[in-house]
Length: 133
Image 1 (cartoon, rainbow, N blue to C red):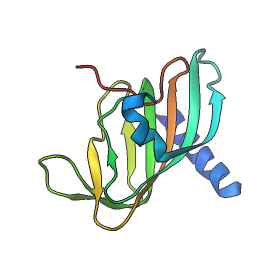
Image 2 (cartoon, rainbow, N blue to C red):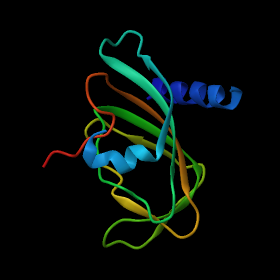
Image 3 (cartoon, one colour):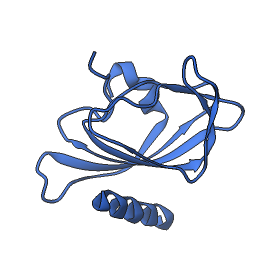
C-alpha cells in the first residue's frame, strides 16, 4: 500500500508540473496521461489518468486486473441503483483491489465527478473489465 501511495503522490506532482466494449462508456470519460512498465514486476503496467463523468453519466460495475488508486479532484453526488444519493466528496481517496467489483453508480445533481486514477494492472488485460458472474 505504501508503494501505491508513493506512486500516487509522484503522479500528482507530475500532473501539477506539466476496455472492453461493455465498459466503453467508462473508458470514454477517462483520459490516459502516462503509461509505463512497473519496474521489478514483469507483465504489469502503471497508468495515470484523469476521468470526468458529467451528471447523468453512469460508471458501470467493473473490475481491474490489478489495483486502482483514485483521488476525487471534484466531488459530486452519485447514486447506485436502489440506493439514496450520496456525496463522493472532494479529497476522498479510494483503493480498489484486484478483481473486486466496484462503481455501478450514476452521477446525479449538477456537478461533474472528476477523478485522478493510478492503475497498476496486468499489461495483457483490459484496464476495465466486466465482473465475473
